[in-house]
Length: 336
Image (spheres, rainbow, N blue to C red):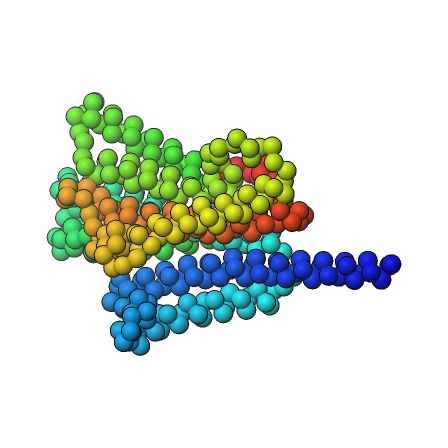
């Protein structure tokens, strides 16, 4: 009798280990596919590579298309190999690791839009008032009036600076961004009604930061369980059933929604996210901020960070369904 119980326990443990392996493998494979898609998207939009579609057309695929297709296979192999070499890693540990990486990405984006907004506003103000030539010289003034130059040599270094700051900062700063939006909007009101002064870049700055606030914070809100949920039945579910609902919801609703945005917005060189980014598209007002192309990029950041967070959420939900210890307690978290 005792021997049968031991065998049953070992069998249950083996099944549990196999389930953990495949749940982790599928999760990391989804992240690997996303990473490879972004690499291939860069090659298509900036290097004129053909993408993987020619692979599925008879006689149309060249070496570049096959190389891009092979990247997906390499990504899947790396994902499975990582899971195979870290079998002791729990679902919750993986979920936390992915969330931490995603929060770092969001934090870097926050600092980037903060720096770009401030610097681009100063450049636009000096340009509007005819002071830029005195500060930067005539040649540099001409260069800064070209979107591709400002995007490449002003915005991109500021994005890199945002990544560096994010590595040393531990707060997301959404409260501060909200405050800056209020200050910028207040400045518009005061300058308009008191000094009868208003320029296009002032409204552009508010829209730029406002878009970043809501689109960047969405994944973090998912982590904090802050999104609106229609709680007709869910509230009364047991923890195990909630985990099951969240796991299926993450795949069927969350990831499908995120990938819909990614594929429509970045599915080709002329897609609605790729094209503005590639051309450094700006608004028709020549004296506004040169950030319209980045607003398209906000959609990409939103979809990518949400996809990553839904993978983390899926792992945590499966852990809840299996009643694994170490569940994250939201009420004990520090506020950002």
